[in-house]
Amino acid sequence: MSMTTLPDLLDKMWKDYTGMNPQALKIYNLFLERGDRVINDHIALRTFNHPKVNIDVLAQPFLKGGYEYQQDYHFPDKKLYAKHFQHPDEQMPKIFISELKLEEFDEELRSTINSLIEQVPDEAPQQFDFCSNGRPWNVKFETYEKLRAKSEYAAWMAAHGYRPNHFTVFVNALTSFDDIREVNAFIKQNGFKLNDSGGEVKGSKEVYLEQSSTLADDVEVSFSEGKHEVPACYYEFAQRYTTPDGKLYQGFVAKSADKIFESTDKGQR
Ligand code: NI
Image (cartoon, rainbow, N blue to C red; front, side):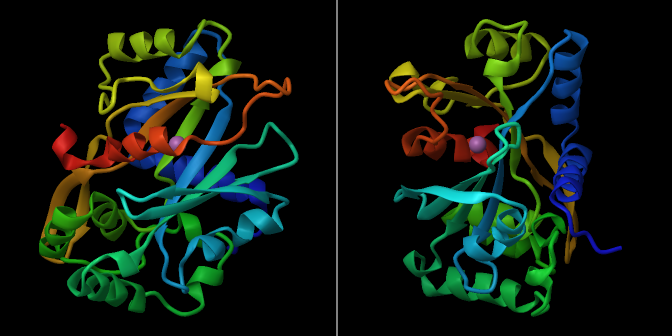
């Protein structure tokens, strides 16, 4: 069955994400049990800046579904570039897509990634739900480990492929919590670990956005040599503040996101 509508795609992304990351579904259900309604602030996708699969390719179904480009971001330390897209319906999650800048890496990493991308059938990235179809290549665990030494992001992409990296709970819409700190305490009380790189709360009221995230759970992934446990996805929380023009800030803060990217690092656990 070919998928052609945005609501179907978002539904597929949520099912794929929660199926692979039981912690996210458990936390989501804990919010519902408190009587809260969970609104997604944004969904994050990852890719490489190769023309076959770059941000603009991944953004296609969202643009067709009414999303519009808003802003871009640079992460020089992590050699990443990102764009965020918004829908006129404010209940729809923002879409945040980042890409690894391959030209900033050595020849070995570039040729490894290019050989993965060569395995992607030419027409596959044009499919409406490509961004949620999983890993379109075979990869060795040995390759994963080598990539990890140079870029955790490249290794995550090699292992998991095209699927949401995280969903994000919009804290402002949770009526049973006063702020993100209360949410964090609740998450920890329930036995989940938060990413504390750069402090549990990234950002501040002064930059109109505060974010926190769980640490990614390990999941079993099939590699050419067999199955290995590697970090999967995390769940994020975002509290937004009103800017001087009276509107709720809708952008992202590069300095905060830089630390959030580390939620899928192996060194974190
Ligand atoms: Ni995020």
